[in-house]
Image (cartoon, rainbow, N blue to C red):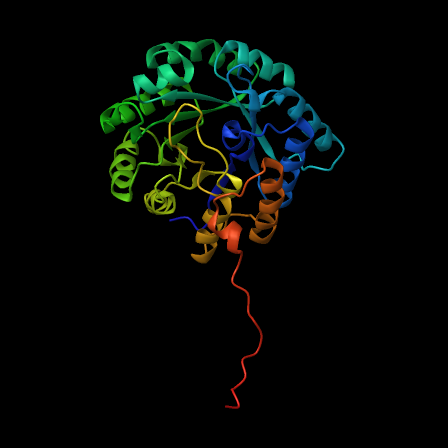
Length: 314
């Protein structure tokens, strides 16, 4: 097993998209800056989706342009990788205008969830990918792929592993460089993760697989550890455990970045992130969204020495 992992920060997109409080572009840019100062190297900065359906992502182009201006000024490293979610060709056109160099596409493993989330069948969603992938190839844009509801669907229940494997293979053939396997409603357990990823590794190189776990039932860290033991080294997390899916009833946010980093650092596995700086972002973000975040480490912080212990005189 590798002694390092890559964290993909989802707070700006998957995190904020389910928040009642809509943050303006400047606040989102500051959020990105704070995350980068904490060592984050890969950031999904927003989504080119209809503001009618996801108002929290309105102004993504503005966020990107302001962030890229900071890169040009030398205030953000050129090495930081920014990506944006696109649902279709129209979104891809908007992403190209904004100047992004990486985009993400997404499909569900459940027909019901696909219809609720993007108003089309799974096959139709893959049909929508064709012009997106053609434009990506033409303009040399990297493409990441998401598969959601890989373990369970809020409308259909358990999702068959064979279906997930087939769709992962189908997405891999499209030419995406990485496929993020999502537990959208936080229903998976370590046994399911082991079983599914063993099958996925037979059709997709493990270096092209990532884990995307929500912590709805408190199983995300165990699931991440299980995936890591099977060779997965890329994980999607969200600062403070922000977010959830607007179309997945009961789903909470992604596993908290701080909690994942704490676990890996405790195992001697490098993440490249500064845990103290991540923790310091938590109260700032809580104030911005006007409620506390669920992260465990974000709440209690690190274990600190209390000083020298002396014998009692009694």
